[in-house]
Image 1 (cartoon, rainbow, N blue to C red):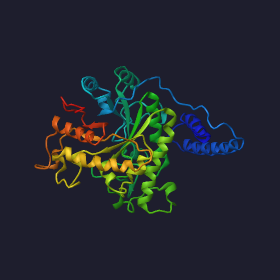
Image 2: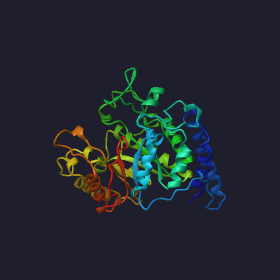
Image 3: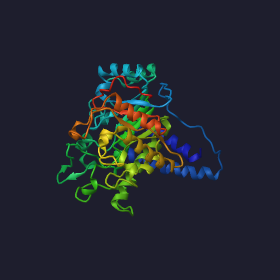
Length: 399
């Protein structure tokens, strides 16, 4: 490790004590980075040792990384309520071993009582005692992953419209009534990274960022909506590349800021993104994001594909769909010098909204088919998604 990295790590550990969503904090970060850069140059001239001791935060909790993460999604409401007992029992009585727990949910609610006074009123605080929850997971050795929904954030959009997209005099909403915040804004970055640092301090061993993207179909509205491009306004690139840069830069920044906390960083990404050079509207480039994370979690639910890989009705053929995707992803990751671990999201729900003849009831056979498809292609980690946390019983999770 070089001296610059050591100084950056030390600087980050000190800066994490600052409020994470204020102009003052952002300015302080910039000044600190500039200061450390200057110190770095001066000290290099004096030929100081190449290696220095590093600061790493110790939460006091110990978790062993499983042989392979096999996890389930857990809402903040489930984690903080009576459902938590049954989910722990599910893991204890099967080959599952991990939980992805909402720390910041799909609406932007912070699901615990944050220590940062500026944001104490943001969220619903479903999890009354997150430390006690994590201590219980430590006792059971259930690997804890904190899910943070980043740029889909109706709560922050309402509180600070200047960080969102304006449609006339109103904050823009999609067809489901959801609002997004602006990935071009560094203040949004620091807000989410600050929450991630809190989660790491609590004892979570991995931070999973979701909705790391612009809204779907944004390319159709990008010149109509009013929003701030921040530092990217002067970039010599078209709007597509500016979006790709903003999303990728956030991931790289978050990874760097979290390094002193000893956590892995993962990102959820649309499965179809791996089939394209980059997704032009939402700003996701599979390969570029993968270069800055420890884990990449593609959402490859069969129900969410149209006619892909020569499969006309993907929801009816889970094994084939997952197999064809895994082949493609393996090839894409093999092109990277240091590829992340692949840990896809799998479907444990029934997509009845697809209509008669286009979907099937998902149960034991369908879940096992997806897991086996991954394993047949050499991918042994996965996560199961069910929005209401009702998971199929009697599944062989290592078929």
